[in-house]
Image (tube, rainbow, N blue to C red):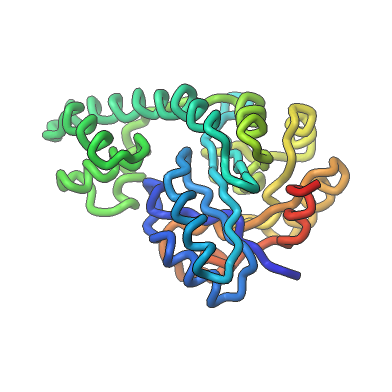
Length: 275
């Protein structure tokens, strides 16, 4: 089997720390055939991934992880683009994701101001403009600079403590947006039961297949072997492509959460992409 890790986050994600070249270096050292940058709601690292693939002996499949919702509960959808996403994707992100994220960021800043934190919305806007980063990344960088948080773990805890929630576009709206941008849509970590994101069973995956879903992220560090077997069965029954990856964000002691620690069959994915 030619192995591919199709779920890796770079520092373009607010909760990740790896430089794109670090990812390629590890991927090549571990004998991976292909890798995907699937950053949260941004394609900022894709151009760098495409450049690095000409240097390293690793194929790059452009991707994204879009924050979504299903039946009123947060959910994530992976998009994979054989030749990179078309411009329509950025329009969708701006209209349906980033504008929502800005409202969330402003609400969180106002929450912090109410607790006496000296940080302004004007500073936040300046950070977004100066760094040309996605809304969530800019917010994290600003709070880091101001000493409000010292690392990503504290940032995530602060967000959770605030109690502020934002509901992103439903999966049936995300799927066609990915298709229109030239990609395929895959439900991410369907069995990851965090109590925060939707856990998908066969009925819900079948409902999304009726909406045009292309695949299931079968292989993920949070999935048990029994879950993997079940998602393989569901995918085969519904004719969906089977993907997988480490979902790496930061250095972890668990090998399955590092680049190449969790993977899928590259040839199976490639056949679907080219079919």
